[in-house]
Length: 76
Length: 207
Image (cartoon, each protein chain N blue to C red):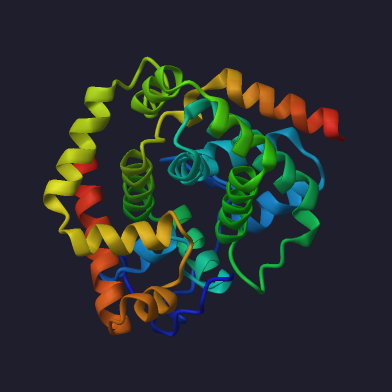
C-alpha cells in the first residue's frame, strides 16, 4: 500500500485512537520514519485530537514535566 | 481492555525502520522507547512525555475537569507507567492503549476515593465553579477563546454522531467493537464515523 492509499484508508486515524494491533502500530511507525507525508498526517491527527481534548499545550509545560521526573526519581 | 487486531490493516507494507528522519529529527520507535524506559533512561522519559502527555492529559481532564487535579493525576500516571513498564505486554495491546488504561484507572480510583468524596462535600461552590470554568486554561499560550473557537468549530463541523463515537473511543477507552455493541450500530458505521470525524478535526487543526 502506498502512502496515498494508507492516508485514505483510515489506518492512521485508528493508529492515533490506539485501535491498531501492536504489529500494525510497528508498521505505521516504520513507514512514518521514511515517509514525511505520513509523519505529517500522524502529527496533524495527534495534535488535532489533543486540541479537541483541550490538552495540546501540556507538552510545553516544562515545570510539570520536571516535577514528574523528580517524582519518578524519588520513587526509584 | 486491549485493542483489537484490525484485520483490514494486515501486511500492507515492508519497509526498514530508520533511527533518524532528516525531516523530523531523531525518531524512536515504540519498541526502543520501551527498552529505554525499562533501562530507566531519562531521555526515554522525555520522549514518552513529549509523545503521550497531551493524550493522557486530555483523558484525565475529561474525568476530573479541574486542571490542578489533572496535573497531579498525570504525575501519578507517569510514575505508575515508569514503575510497571515490565508489565507492558505488546502482544496484548499497544503502549498507547496500555498507558491510557492506566490514566483512566488513576482518574476513576481518584474520583471514588473517600478523600475526594469528602472534598466534594466540603468545597465552596464559589471556589469550585470558577475552577471548572477555567478548566482548559492550561497555560498563557492558549486562551479560553482559542480553545472555545477550536472546540466550537470542531463540534460545528463534526456531527453529533461522529463526536459521540470519538469520545467513547478516545476518552472512555472502548474499542470499535464495544462501541458498536453499546450504540447498537454496525461495526463499519462506527469505524466510518470515527475516521471521518478525526479527519475533520485534522483538517480544522491544520487550517
